[in-house]
Image (tube, rainbow, N blue to C red; front, side):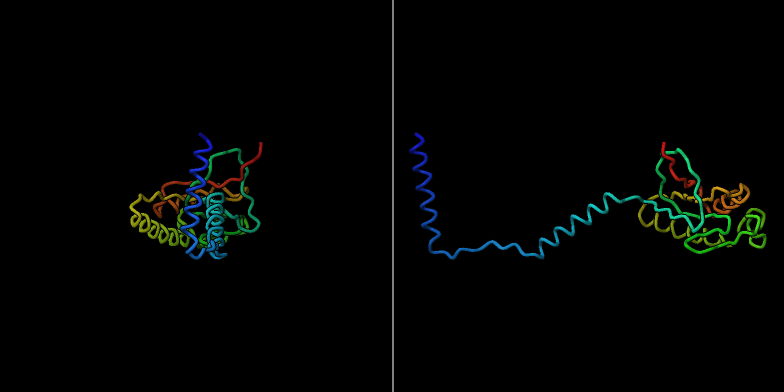
Amino acid sequence: MTTESEAAFLARKAAKRAGRRGMVEEKAILGMTSLMDAITIIVVYLLKSYGSDPVLIAPTQGQKVPLSQADTPIQDGTPIYVSERAITFMEKRVVQMDETGQVDPAALQGHLIGPLYDLLAEEADKAKQMAEGKGEEWEGRVILVGDQTLKFSVLVDVMYTAGRAEFREYAFAVVQQSG
């Protein structure tokens, strides 16, 4: 029985060959461009999926971010960098600190830091419009990147200012301590 099925198979194969004899054979050539496109797409996908931390915090020069054993990942928000020398927002030094590490009295009205408030209120308006355009609710989260030696009164002033600019949630950036 196997010989009959083998014979039938060989007969069909010979018939197909005979039918193709009159046709020109096509060579299958895969172009280098299409291979490079495929590899590029794969590499971009891998880079985006493996390195997709939504928040990138880069402390300002000389700033020492506090250590913590917290293992909760930081959520997306608007970062404010507060060091002994200055308050930085959107890569701009907003307010200089005096020699004692306090906010410059000329920029302070009660607990409100005027120049920081102006920038935060503008950023809040932009973020609200973007969230509204996406059909999402604006979270109003600020990430405070403070120095280890930051005075509590400065932290209170920055948080008060952020609250007045309609930021409702606060997150503190820390460096995760191993162990």
